[in-house]
Length: 318
Image (cartoon, rainbow, N blue to C red; front, side, top):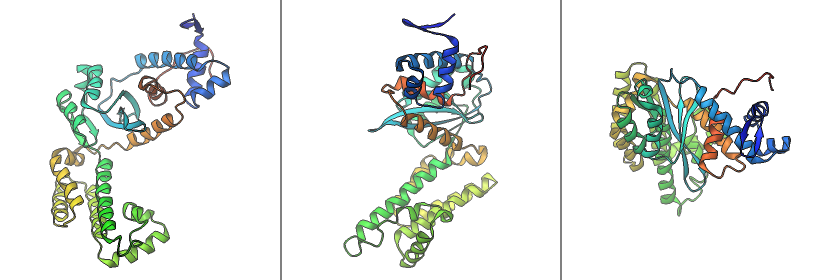
């Protein structure tokens, strides 16, 4: 029996062909290749995703990562929930508020929620609120890559402040140096290393912030939680005495969320795999011909990132 979509029935075989092709190519290109309407492509993918979501096995999910991506310009966000052990998209929803994440927990259900051992996310209050209300038994871990991202923002704010202070007297001093301070030392080009060497001799505020940034990252080298927490407390004290307001603001943020910052040293999960999947999600967004609604974008994400099973057919494709 064909699967019927309105007035245009599509056979099971063609549906699987469409599903396989659109996992690798933009929907519009597949529509042009097969000589069918874009809406027919969407309908086939919708049915394939519906089948896949029902057939997938989520019984072993114990660690999840939560992150958001920008679906469009002007801060149109999409919240994604990923399986950290078997990297795949579990759920996606429009916006990034507490109500959005609560939709996931409502769908996931009490039985599966109780199996969640750890949840990794950014220091974002709406997510934190929803997690603590809906999955209080899970260990909440703040992703180290997001923490370093916040740290880099603080360092860059120091640079911006000092650039404004010195702009009149020496406008070229810090011009074009943003990535010198934000890159890892081993990733600097030869030209950037030479310039950094010169700037380090000038007792600049940004250099103090840079040294604090590099020393902060050493906390993740500790193997024992007690030693890591002791080092982090020492670093926070040092940063608070730096008289650099953006760095002090970063420390206050760490201290506000302290318990869930140090849980990383006990559980050790990160959203590294999430970042990889998010990059793929942005590729989906970039090639999003016709994805004008969050529903269609969600469909595309499930199809590309969900590792959803397809119906079996007599023939094998691709």
